Length: 188
Image 1: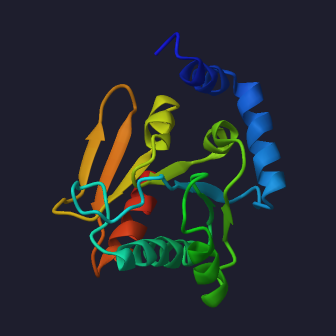
Image 2: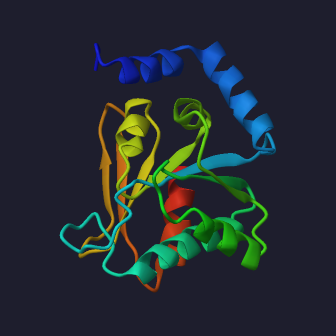
């Protein structure tokens, strides 16, 4: 995609190995990520709603809490990974993930609402999203993307020569095992 300034910047960063490495080092330092850890970015969207009209939304307010718990509890057990939850600037659930992190003593995750999304994506190894356009931006820079859903959907893997990978995962009671398995497949 050319001519779209935002996408041009992503592509420029992705194609400049020296700049990409410098950005990764700066992000790891800024957020205290150990150099040997894989960085998972969970980008929330302003669509974290529960009006129930589309497969991209939540059915109940409890689904939002369940989503954060599932993602955070999974990452807690992944000792080789670190999670940055990058909240949308208008996300009303700012304290919920922080409370879960504190309550379950999760050491390998933080929550941020401000920060350069382009740089955070450039430093990431994998991106998780619900309704955020950040998933598209991550695919443009060839990052594996996990799209969380709350409706009738099974895991679908799309892998083409373009290296664009998108993983759909329906959240249910068995999510931690499925999610852990999926992230480990992505990191192979």
